[in-house]
Image 1 (tube, one colour):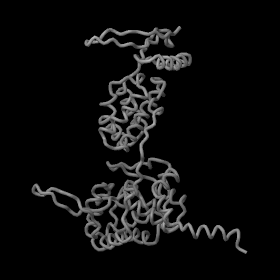
Image 2 (cartoon, helix red, strand yellow):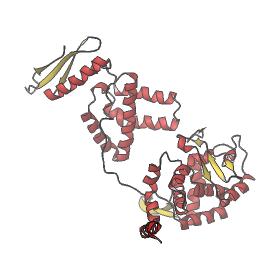
Image 3 (cartoon, helix red, strand yellow):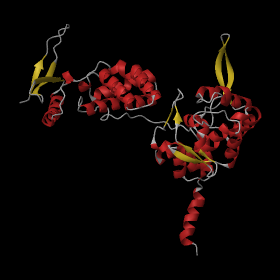
Image 4 (cartoon, helix red, strand yellow):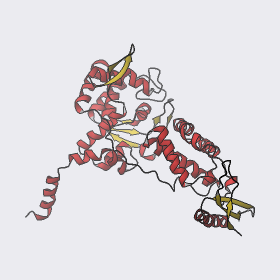
Length: 387
């Protein structure tokens, strides 16, 4: 039998006496349990759920539940055991140390409520000043609680029951203009000829940096005019499959890129992996080295710069630095394909996006800008009404 009774707690040091509502019940093992609530309604609502859980054999008493720290560490170990990349699990561990462990580390997962979750979102936002960080932390904490559910340590995932709502500011992805790309190509051809083929692959094929660094000659089909993306390299130079099924794809290769690659192949350093863009020793390139030794220098030489405030002898001055990161050239390639009238579905496939929604979320404004509403309207009318 279960019952709800009103209790008056012992007075505090200030002499205040607090009233609570206590639920007395038996768990699945027929052991007596108690749980207190501020209001009768909270107690009633909880008891209804607890009875159903006890009947189903899924009830976990709050006093026996694990701490969030214990579950989070077990989840991260499970991620590693299942082959998640080191770079991914490192990020999980860092965000756990920075946010969820200080806030929830000692909390029992069975005692967490939706009110706790809302406060958690506020605290993470206060620490990070970033809605995107809150969103990412929420996903990872939700995965921790989902893992606890799968292990039978938790019945209800309070994260999934508590969405994080905020006004999303849509930012257009940074990308160079056609004139800027032309200037970079000109400087690269003049001073960094060994990087010209790499630049063309970035500009015309839209590869991610990790995909570029793992590209092999066996993935380049000069007869078909395609580049197959089948691998990616992490920050430590380890080559593995793309993170998602959509990442494995074929990308069209134009004549300019094919010609540059053929010329580069004649002098490309030998590599045991057959890499297209290896180091001089034949190993996987480091992303920072590519940026520092080529892409940033080429932009500065081409005048594609922005001002950055730096301190020089205690005085704040403006220094010209490279305007774009490597990923900006991937966005430029997508814009180029849109301008060249590739279909949205084909662009989604060649970009390696998981869904067409992702493509439209990022580049929808470019598709919209190309459409002439008046001409489209008149053309639609003419299809039916033309004699």
